[in-house]
Length: 228
Image 1 (cartoon, rainbow, N blue to C red):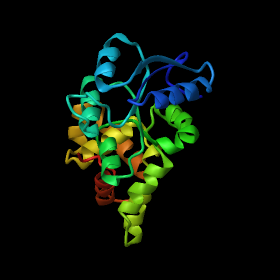
Image 2: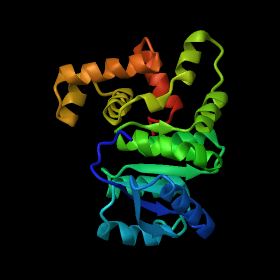
Image 3: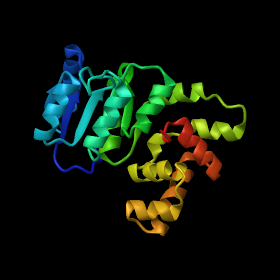
């Protein structure tokens, strides 16, 4: 497994259903010594108490966790996680079929989204992508979002068929900031990179996504929830 992490990937898992927790743990154990579960939580409150004292490389969590911020609002929960642990890679497992909520998860800054029904097929792919610094969006998630934004023209088709999982985290960050209205120069100042580097990362993102104009890049960001 290509990874930016030396040694076993230390993983915390969180789900409010004990059977699902056992299933995730068994699945990870089946991947061998390259992964190790170092913490488990059955609620948002448990997870927030666990993370400060647990050295981990990755969090795999359900979308909606009870007791999180006094609410079961999944997007609020994910945004709180991202605020408090901005550098922690997060993969969300979900049974949600709502395209707006799926886009919202990506907009909240998670690194991967996998449907629970596809977990046995896609979780390892998601872990490999995320620990290598890329975003992973499961096949069902991509199809749901694309169907919800069914295009009428070929140009729009390129936008909805673009695969977010091809972008590195830095490229996804540049797309998010550019679509929010910042210039390349302003982005460079914010992320402490050169203008040349930021411009190259923007161009690389557009090439990977198959987009040919800034308007398509903006529309891509809107469809995939990167403007929230």
